[in-house]
Length: 174
Image (tube, rainbow, N blue to C red; front, side):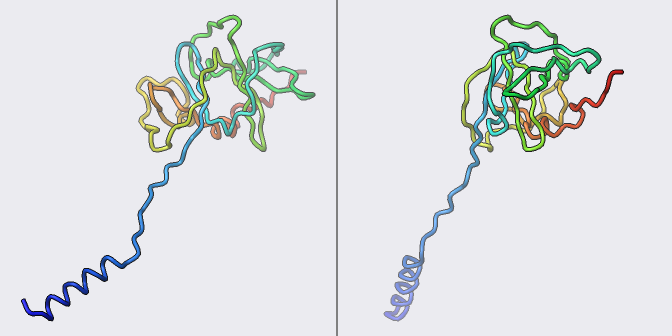
């Protein structure tokens, strides 16, 4: 190999080494979720849709409303309805006394509470860890399903629940 060939090879190597080095960092969107229990099954919702969690107290049942409306309650000078996901998910209803909670969901257009048997932990998960596989024998509306997370916890889509026009009751009683 001639001296000129060696210099050309060395120049190519020097140019390759002197180029700016960029590292591609894979961005992982992180989801913060609240786990809750419903008839022995584990569910979760993203905390960005949750306004607060309250004890199930002072819920007034209403006549002539769909079965999924558990009732209403006075909340900070307003009236909120309580939606019973057990009815929407075709689950048996066996309330555990003393542990029942209400998860208040809120968006710019809608606010209501969801019934929960129990409240679990708030945890963070990578969005890439959410499995989109729909569980077999699922009994809930598939539009509410966002995915499965660790330990077969069903991640519900808070946006879909809050925007579901089927949850709005327009009936009037004379």
